[in-house]
Image (cartoon, rainbow, N blue to C red; front, side, top):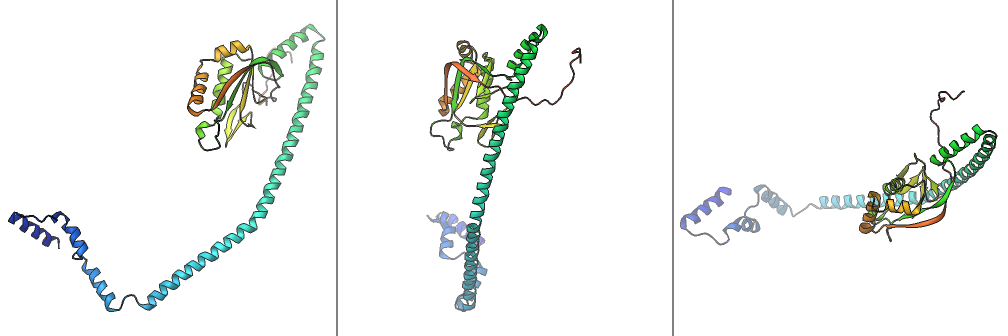
Length: 294
């Protein structure tokens, strides 16, 4: 077949004449049926001689389709019944878990209040005992300085409040308009570098070892979830802190996020901010201090 088409083309070129549709000859042959494979032609002839598809084959194919459709309908019906049966069970289990969460949260809050009260009582007893001698008073001053550095005591005074919030209308569509943990990390580190003496996020006091992380879509501060907008309070001289922070790498990054993704970023002065003491640090190792006298 290919040799025939090649011989015809060569003859046309020898005569010096070429058919206008020569480049389309293959398509022309296909449409005219000249290139039908002999096997296909023979099968078509047998099918035509037998009167087309046998009735038995048609009935079998029709019955197979009907069986498949019936089985699919049965499966869908069974799945629907199972879903309807499991819905009340799932709702009850969800309600039970929510009740447990509320109960455990209440217990944790009560224990935290008790811990705060015991810590305050211990601090008063310690202060009274140290006031009885000059050496004790020196130790008390040292303890006060160390407690302030470790955020173990409440702090108050003037400062700067910086607010970060998600872009307006961001409800899970454009994730670039959300505030992430690294944004808060950059802000907090910038405020420490600017001279802040104490920092808190949404009322939670930060320590030198506080972790700011993300779990799912929530931001955790000291392993407690917080919701936006996020108010970062930095105690210290407001003018000095603001002047040192303005134009810093942290300020430039947050300004860029504000311009590009419309996140909320603003700052204001405060004259009477209060930050609570941070949670107690978990001591992993303890060794006696040399020369402490037992």
